[in-house]
Image 1 (tube, rainbow, N blue to C red):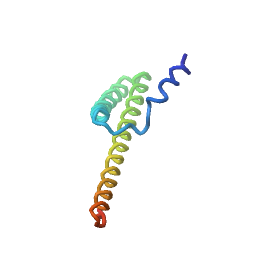
Image 2 (tube, helix red, strand yellow):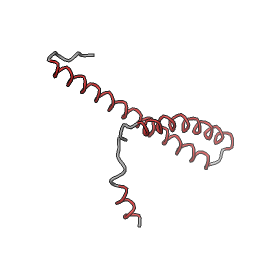
Image 3 (tube, rainbow, N blue to C red):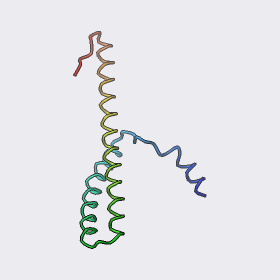
Image 4 (cartoon, helix red, strand yellow):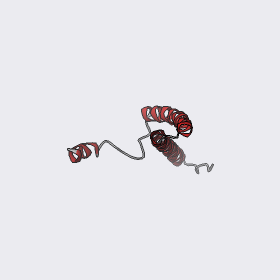
Length: 100
């Protein structure tokens, strides 16, 4: 059953995430919310000294890291595409591309 589910998801899950408006919105929403939740739960874990809050805080920190990395990868892809389009436009117009 798990192998079948993973087989169906194999074509849908991509990393880095595609740079779409929806993904940018979701990642920009997830990053600060997960960071705030991680700080809150970690504070609670330090006060209560329970193992479950520590576990939840670590999971939230991982989610924060993954969403931050996803945002950086999407931004890098967006900048790469913009540079390629500028170079192509410069080539078509017959001038040398501007270097930043």
